[in-house]
Length: 156
Image 1 (cartoon, rainbow, N blue to C red):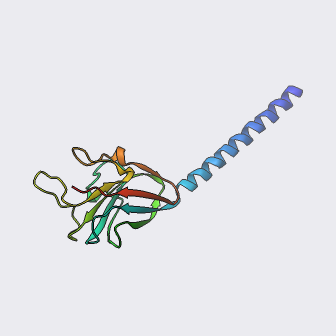
Image 2: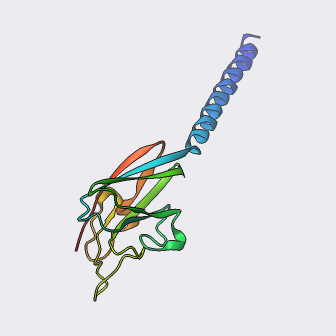
Image 3: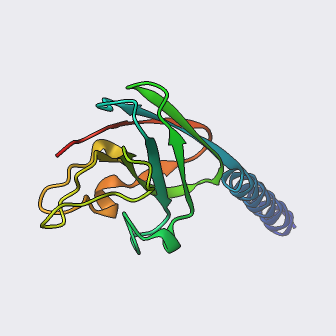
């Protein structure tokens, strides 16, 4: 009889614990589905002429210049040599960001003879462009809740 009661109670404890872990998992998932606000501190612009344009990607396809694959993009007028951009309502997840100093206001990262940028640019994680643009993996960051990134501009 004691074994039978112990088995019933033991099973109830296991069921109770599994219910708690499922409840915790559901709460964690609902928190991850909340939208986040991303603030980007753009540092070391070389002039106040033009705009800072950005593209945010949630995968490597099209990074850093593929307009159709960006989950968010825009251009903001430059207000100071160190300025701030705010992107609202991004779902939690992994992203990479590319920005450029659109000095002439044409909303294109202008390039020279061999495809090298003639305007300033930068990537999340301050990833370095060596023989080409930084990769998605180098620029990738985890967004969960409101956060601030610092991106330092690089000029040719």
